[in-house]
Length: 485
Image 1 (cartoon, one colour):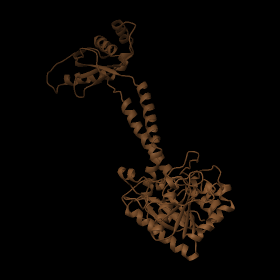
Image 2: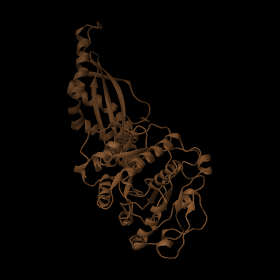
Image 3: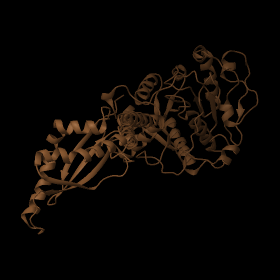
Image 4: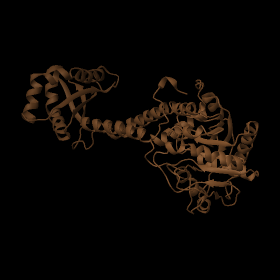
């Protein structure tokens, strides 16, 4: 078997893989978004400290005014005095006189408040601003500074008249810095969500499954006998006909045509070698091999062939429920164990197809399947029938298919689109290839837009017949990052 070579990324396949991966790992972007957003919000909320501010506007005039002309020398001096006051404010504030006057006004106990001053360009005005975390302390400090600042500043600028023309009447009610903790949390949450989606996208690139007939051929060098479209059926149709069979109404023309084409291809292949016993298996449970085997048998019977379908899964007999047969019967378990000497084949309703399926099960069927009686039964059936189809357990999970392979003339391998891991498919096919000729593969349950060959259709129905929980779960993702497709 040759390994699938690395191909360029197909956008439709990538989007399909991304959607499927997101269905399994949708919690990753949600958790990352909530975690990053929550931590950012908490840190921003804890570090937020409201800052309050109060301001007063002063007018300044020189002590010697000689003219009221706006362009006069005295007006220039007034503006210059305001600029000097704001420039020398740090020195005024730090002066012993300023501190002494503020202490006298406020007392010894006062909250930390910073004071700053700025002049209005080309005007004999300047603004004194108090800033701090306590609005009442800010307001009180500003009022105290208004009282003592002119006296302290006069000692530096000399004979300068300072007059308050605008001051607050009460402490500031709102801080000047907004609490942006929520906005920060939302922004960081969105970043976390995007990072999570990027991680899901990267994980989807490691999803190594089959999407097309070309993928199958590159992977295991087997031709694709048919691409079976997925079928969507309404609730009423599923109630009337729970199983997806050619004999049921509402199955869909695309599905029916695909199964008829598969039966014609099988007839051409087997006619060259006189083959009759055909094994049908898959890699893992849920790939629809039982549905494919049942409908292939129905299609062959509809062509006038004498066909029997054998339920080769001795751990779980599933064919009778699929065809809606409830009568007691003997299957391979009873026949191979000697409990049923003269077994009766079951007729399938609305078809000439015969069925060998029973009610008994066995936990370890390898001894029964490998017994000489199994070969004798198949030889007896060869003499009376045209086709003997054996539905086996998944070859990638159990060795039952390999045990039955020595009695078969050939095998059909069912691969459900975007399900089994590519490495598992290769290993499973290799385990069978030495025991039985492989006629080809069936790409099952194909989705429109994610396969470059096969049928275009508008239906979808997941018709897998599940296995019990004791079968192990198989991952779609490869741990070998260097062998991605």
